[in-house]
Length: 132
Image (cartoon, rainbow, N blue to C red; front, side, top):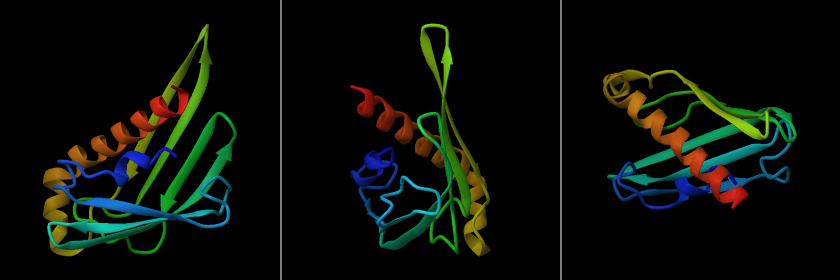
């Protein structure tokens, strides 16, 4: 549910969009896979994520497996945490990523932070939509 905004065409995706495929665990169980693919400016993009931690309802972490085919980041780990804070709930979204391999590493050095911030924003919008 949190990645639903990445399935929409956007400026960051240069008008492209990703489609999402989940296994029988629907991306909600440890070991469950989430695969995304699409095109951006003629480049085929693909990644396979696996859920590595899940403490419902407070924490979920997943990471890429294999060799993702992305332009500005390589393998990454991303997660979301919820914690009570008085009468409110504190939300923490994080991403740790490597630069892509080969010549794309230069793109990662130039745009990796901007893209990873966009990914975190997309997760934030997904959380907001979930609790509306």
